[in-house]
Image 1 (cartoon, protein in one colour):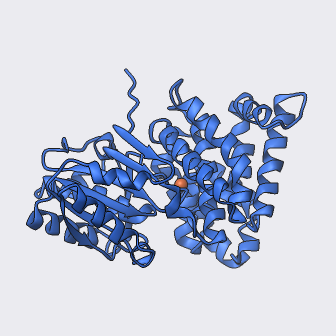
Image 2 (cartoon, rainbow, N blue to C red):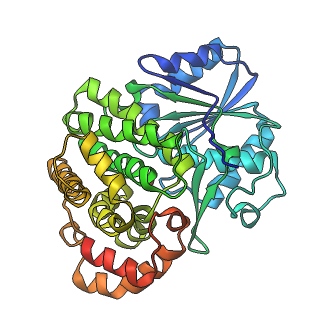
Length: 381
Ligand code: FE
């Protein structure tokens, strides 16, 4: 038996934030990050809309870029005190990821991270609150996914949480929130979204439900990412939807080794997640093509790339991704991104071994061991 899960409702397009005026509930906790959304006036707007709906709001702010166990526990304690029936999370990936984990510890105060680390092992949520996610970047798509990443800094562990219980009830995908994103963030988050879509299209858990979402996301990202990078408003809106489609695909089809390696190299070399994916994607396609060149060829044909064989079409897809990186100002290798040969050699064994254990490795279409990971990494270097 297979399962395909998405939010109950997705509100999208111009002024979709205003749906908050019509939400049913009594008390909402609004979880946000560092304050950019506050400065841009969106926090006041949201609190105002909820007030119109007769909902009292408490603000929980200061979720850091890679949210910690401490922040999650602090948020859960604030929720237990305030007793909201709505959790509203606003931001790029982090505040939404953190709020998803807070939700678990709000409803189940006695549970531990160790108990929920096993994928799809969560207790049943929605006993106390429903969850609304509002995305302010166009990449992670955490507003529609079953995932959250929380860091235990004391133990040096990242907990990648996965369970359909934390797929939000409502996602709001309003283009106004990404209108002023700086270009380098558009580039990195956009390449993250493209990697989500391409990995989902070839992942072992792909399905007839996820395939159309992945293909449409890839097509729309190719159509709009460059213009979005240069600030075109319509393209920003199209990218915001496309990254969400990619999220709907990968939340169910899962990902592959570009993400396994991006998780480990991002932390080790201090390179943004989307930038790591952009560096890795061509080498990963090269590696996986041995078992799914036909799938890459389908993507290439859809994009209007030319070639007579699956191999030629896969090569054309790889070239087009490198071209895209170039146009977005993303240097193609780790070396060009400032990683010294010494540092790379010093850590390659450790990165490769850890990447094999990453949850995304299990759904990669081609099996891989540490030696294989080292080869892919060396290509990307
Ligand atoms: Fe990602």
